[in-house]
Image 1 (cartoon, rainbow, N blue to C red):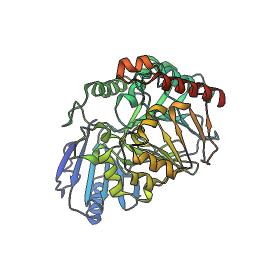
Image 2 (image 1 turned 180 degrees about the vertical axis):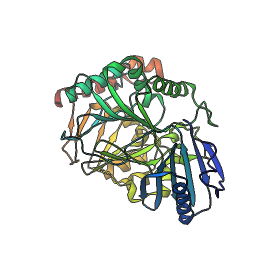
Image 3 (image 1 turned 120 degrees about the vertical axis):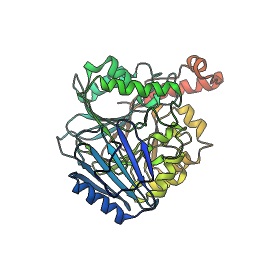
Image 4 (image 1 turned 120 degrees about the horizontal axis):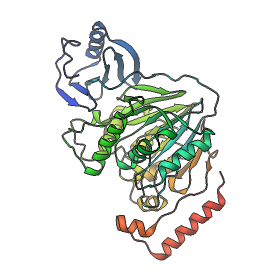
Length: 422
């Protein structure tokens, strides 16, 4: 993928970036939409077939295939064209297809927060009864590989649940940890069709970041190498893909951050917008300051949504303006009640998201069941299943709380278990 001169004989690019997974990006600076159209015509002349054409606000993108996937997008606010030659991605579906009549639902899964305050897992039911999943809990959520499979069995009624698509925002251990365990130890108990992700190259300038999640990213790729039957799709900004009846649009990846630093690894998050049953659901993962700047610069209406996963668990991430443009009426916090309470006074973004929303839900307080299309206050919260292991938390993280605070938290946990029914 390093030589595209045969496709674009007139191309002069200003930068080249190794995106990982046999994929490279070529950046053309100080350019315009006319040049974008010229490059698209050159790709077609070279025999590339158009898969999809997509405009996001004023941003233009087209996706082609011949011997490999070729994705071209133009960003007028930056006057740049990015050309991505993707040697990993195989066939994928760009537009949603009706496959059955199962009612669509979004779940914010209550990860086991006994030893860890972060981690996130969202599950959407497709109309054929299979699932689209976003991320998995931390490896310190020690039993969640089993809990996820058991939950999928319960809500599907199938002994071997079907996952039509599994999306990973980035390779932090609290987003891919339990997927690695599921592949390693429970692969016979679940069916997985396609995974969607865009992780940076292991030889990236900023690698190896923190060694534990650098190794987790390596394990993720090695686990998939052992299962070539699982299709892999590397997602790129402007690209559309579909999982059954769920339409998904990519709004940002680490390719957009280049050449800025990704030492804050959260800036490698891939950001997607899901649309199902007339409801727009925004998943920014752990998008941080650079990602926020990219999206604020590029998008307006494209950020509008009904349901918002609050970025980076409600820790420092995206800006208040990000939430104002999104305008979500339901805010989902993939975090514990303890950390939510600690963060709220110092995080203006969290307060902004809550002020705009009609309702918000915190993942540690029980799995949240949201029927689609979304309607305010038509949400169920399942009984609170897990509770903090205060001694374990202190041994791992040195967080300490007063006995009075711990007693109050436990009473609130017990009250949630009694008050909320599945």
